[in-house]
Length: 298
Image 1 (tube, one colour):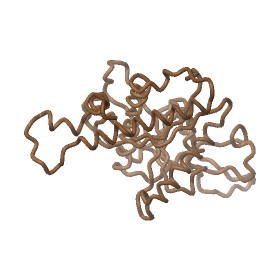
Image 2 (cartoon, helix red, strand yellow):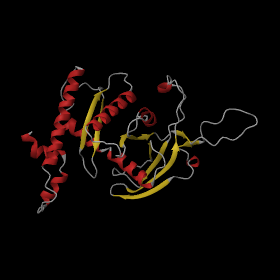
Image 3 (cartoon, one colour):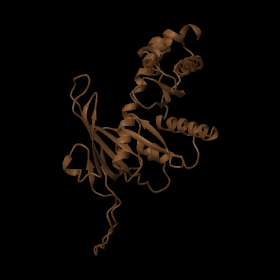
Image 4 (cartoon, helix red, strand yellow):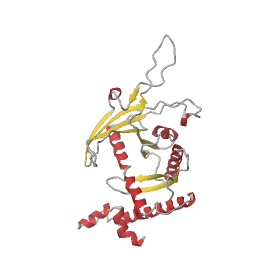
């Protein structure tokens, strides 16, 4: 694999403490590619497949899409506004968003009405105001996690970069901002606030907890990528053709899927009586343990 050939992955996350993910799609990013456009196309194709397979039906809760830093979550939410999805993405700590448009007040001197409210500066607590919701959760690794949320905040768009060719008036893309802080990190480093933007509004305390906990689940992908590289040899071959790299990537994804299916197959019947600790641990078998036990048969 040639260094510098990035791939965009979509993976389904499992609930609970696990190092397993379900890899659903992978697309190689060519030089100069529009990351947002490729991401939206991937998500759109995936949602279409889920609907066709009846994995999502009308009346089900919207699909939560979790993005890390580097993705422009508000723009992705706008481009996918016709799909049953919620977008949750991390934002830089130096961002500045705007509050809702204030009520119009008659001004005898004239002038255009304001389109944006006051500034919400991530780095200035004086600009935050009263939270929409605040939650406190005791965690095993991070101590107490405190989440604060503010409702209906949006970025102030300008006709530059991705919005340069937008032929209509620039939209107001309102969402919920969540600030997550913890007591300490497992690595003993200095914990810094994590800022998240969620594409829905009127968030409840339950919504806030669901969002930040889903974002932390995203780090399960790091275990998956380490498995792909170190155990399944994703980056081992010296492939110089993009088509060959794509074929090899999908072969590795297929092997990972076989391991995940073997993991579920080896899990005991939930109704059966479990007598030993070894049997009880099968339900939480790591990828490395599955390879040791099922590898020869795969």
